[in-house]
Image 1 (spheres, rainbow, N blue to C red):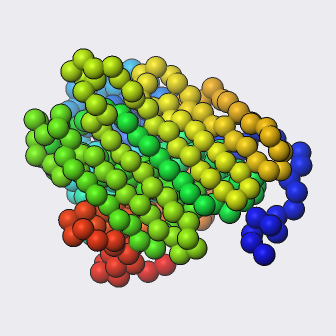
Image 2 (image 1 turned 90 degrees about the vertical axis):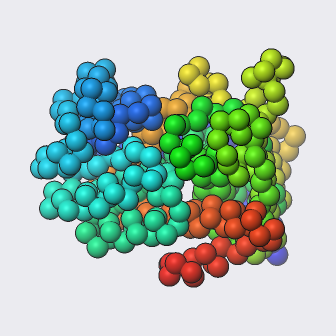
Image 3 (image 1 turned 90 degrees about the horizontal axis):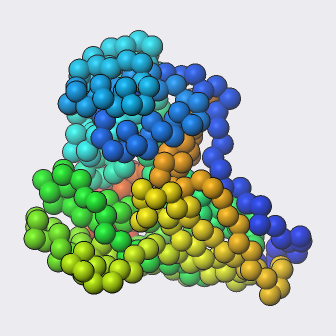
Length: 384
């Protein structure tokens, strides 16, 4: 008997899904933000204010920018350097919004202040590769600091609602999942020095979402090519990325991450968007991600149908959007972990498997073969 056959009839099926993050009872822990770029200024701090979190201080490599963001977002304390911010003994949580090749340097300084710093929220990717991610996790664990990773697509409203569908059994046993991204992101200046375009910037969201929905795959096969538009700016490998995740039970997940998306920048008609689909033995869910319309506040969407309500489509909708509302969830899961003395939903050690999956995609593309995730984890001594 399959799992789906064993599920008791689900009636009445409801479109009222659990898509919002769990919030901490205590929202008072003081947060110090390191970095004052777009993601901190327009996402983190906006989300924290809406949720009632205590963003107490900010520092940036550009002190003038830190002061400007502090004034705009009503952050009480501004420091000229992040080292000065870390010396503020009122700060319990550090929100690190710096480029990935700077993260390890910052974490090494953070752990020197474990007498008053209890938690860290680090941007994804966690360092520049799995090796650096392992070092960041080790440093925080040795210092007794709780580490969470800002894999914020897990808190996109359609992604979280789909997880609830899966947990309720509305879809039965998953059979096939797909993500189709056709978008032209605004690249960050530091990507040029790292030579990255898609795998560690956008694909990491989708790879982590597949892990969130379905658990860990056995292996991945990836194929990549450069993006013609970005190639005129800097050399890179991972422009357009195609990959297939194979699971032990036969389930398959695949994504097409296309940042070329046609010559619409040059004047052709545009066809931009992110669409996802999950097919199961008892139902089908399909959705869109509203992010490509940013700064227009466009909520993601979800439609689903299930054999437990034959012939019907359910279309739950919400007002929240991925940017900035998902960033409530990424900080909330860290504050909840500190409050309950347990691991965050997106803890540093768990995120090593997402980092391993990204590194496996690079290896697969370079060596033209399927790569098992355990191959990378064993090489770096990562165990459950």
